[in-house]
Length: 446
Ligand code: 5AD
Ligand code: SF4
Image (cartoon, rainbow, N blue to C red):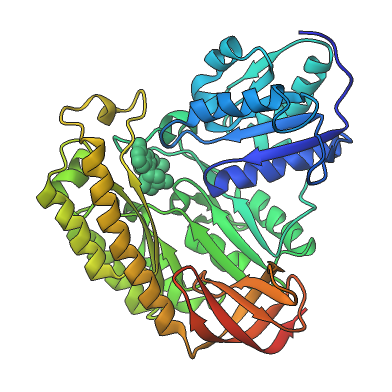
C-alpha cells in the first residue's frame, strides 16, 4: 500500500444493532479528537469506517459490495481510506484483508480504541488488523462524550455467555463483561451535561450487568438504574436487550417504583415452542416466559412489550411454528422484530439436520409479521386519547413538524413551537401502525 495524506474528514457507516450505533459514535468522537472532522452530507470523506453487523445473512457480501462502490467512485468521487470495523471485521478480518486490498485496516469491536494508531499506519502505507479482545481496555482509552442526542445510548455490558445455538454474538463480541459502576455513572453524567434527556443502557445481555456501588455493595442493573435516576436532569431511562434468564425480582420491582424507567420492555422469546427453544439453547419455556411477563405487567400495568422472533430454525415443523403464532396472540406485542433463520458459520445450528427450505420460511415470516402488525396497530389504536410526554428528537418531513418518542417508544409526530430535546406534553390523536399523530398541549422542559 502507498503512503497517503492524513485524512481530514471521516464518515462512519454503522449497520445492525444499537451497540454498533454506540460504537460508531465513540469512533467518531475519537476521530474528532484526532482532528478529523465529519464529512458533510453529500461530500466525499477521506476516511470511511464501515461498522459492520454479522448477525444475519450476507453481511460479509454487503461489506465487499460497499468497498467496491467506494473504490469504483459510485459512492463518492474519490476513493477514501477504508476501515472495516464491527462484527464482520471480528469474524472475517483476515479474509477481508486478503480479498480487499483497498481496505487499509480491520478493527474488531473490542479494539477500536486503537483506530487512531491504525490510521497513522495507513498514512505510512502500512495496513493493519486488530481483532484482539482485551477485557475492558477499550472504554478507559476513549475520549469523553461530547456530541449527543436527547436520546443517547450508554453501553454498560458487552458480550454474551448464553450461546444460543443460532447466534454468532458470543463469538464476535466475546464473553460477558460489565463496565465498572463508577465509569458508567461518570459517562451518564457527561451525557446529561451534553444534553441527553434519555439514556438507553445497552448490552447484548444488558440485565446480566453486575458491579459494585460507591459503598462496595454488589449491585445488578436495577441498582444501576436507581442510581442513575437520582440525577434530576436525566428524565428517562431505558435498557436493551435482555435475556429472560437474567430478569430478577429487583428489576421487576424497579419497573413499578422508578418513574423514569420507561414502560417498555424488549424481551426476546425467539419461538413459542418448547422443543425449538431447547434446540436453540434458550433456557426458558413458553410458559416460564409468559409467567415472567405477567410479573412485569403486575409491576407496571401499562408496560409495552417488544420481542424478537426467528422462524424456520432447523427442524421447526408447521405445528411448532403455530406455537409461535399462539404466543404472539397471547402476549400482544406493542412492537417486534422477526427474522428468517440464517445459518451462521461456526454456530451449532448451522450444521443441524433439517434446515428449513426458504419458501417455507418466507411463508411463516409473512404470517408471523401479519400478526405482529395487527398487534402493533391495536396497541397504537389503544393509545389514542392518551396524553403523554414526547421527547423531541428531530424535525419531521413537513414544515413545522417534529418527531419524538412516547414513553412506550412509539414514534410521534406533531406540529408546534418546540425544540429538539424538549419533553413536550402531547395528546395522541391518530394512530398508524408505525407512528402516531399528536397535538401539542404544552412544552414541559427545554
Ligand atoms: N438467524 C436469524 N435471526 C437471528 N438472530 C440472531 N441470530 C440469528 C440468526 N442466525 C436474531 C435473534 C436476536 C436478534 C438480535 O437477531 O432474534 O434476538
Ligand atoms: Fe445471541 Fe442468545 Fe446471546 Fe442474545 S442471548 S446475543 S441471541 S447468544
